[in-house]
Image (cartoon, rainbow, N blue to C red; front, side):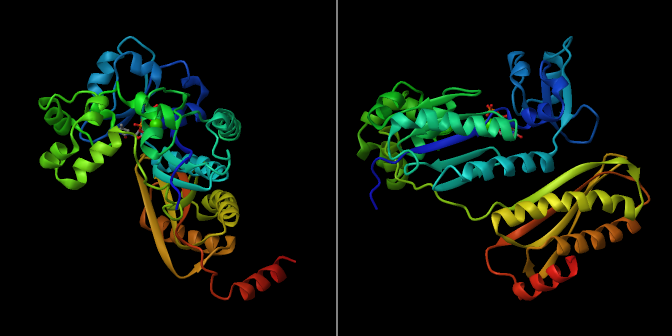
Length: 372
Ligand code: TTP
Ligand code: CA
């Protein structure tokens, strides 16, 4: 396979968890917003997951203890919120789905990052990538409301460093002939796989910048780090990376979550909401032409505790009625276990495959007949 002239894009959503929170509450936009993982021991204990750029100006960083972030934001209108992974996954899935339509292959690396191979779409031309990336940005912004940063390069490694160099809402294109020069002045730890320990070891050898690493004798590198790592460092520093953009199979799940009009312990009332959510989940399932084998519910109770329950089907399914039936069963069981009222509820299907579900035509036939 010819590996030259690839056009690879890395898309990285801006301050993702915090931006998702701004999306559902516009009042947050001009305030410092901190998303925290609360350890639950005391109200204050826990760490910062991420924060918006206003909070970052005050020195808030991911991983910082919450009490420290509070101290830094004292006297501001800062808002602290707990992580809501189900909601962020939902937004992420919607964006990934849009991105898929713009690439020959998409490799999702985390909830907010994906590599896209767009070589064919831009006919191998780096001149065209800027407009192309702008178009993708505009579509995601208008359909989902989320901004992201893009790095474009001749391979994944350069695309990643390019993306990191300009955030938020960045767009950095590094052409193949510029790649080595682009990397050269940057510190070695900007390369994937060069952490604190490795960069300290490199510094001891007089290697500080990626450019220093690029011209360092490769034999000496392999003598220190072994053949695989030594050669990787040498190639990476020289902007050489042949790793393909590889589809990781289907996204793990499709889900929707919503808040009840009022807290309730009544099965029929909660089912009205889950049926509504199931409609959307089923639409996504159909659009993606996948079958699922697992159905799950997610419940947030009035005491703010959250629970999930799931079951695995014997055969893969893809229809709405199957989801509704199992969600009802799961909810029924769940409500009989607790007295506490439900506040929010979610529906999720997962364990995807592309096989035709068993007796699909027959089931399809019955369904169509019943609908009429
Ligand atoms: P990042 O992409 O590292 O950060 P970000 O999206 O918040 O900000 P930006 O890309 O604009 O710099 O991480 C993605 C999400 O992962 C982030 O929104 C929250 C989560 N996260 C943690 O929970 N803990 C962490 O230490 C980090 C770095 C991220
Ligand atoms: Ca991000």
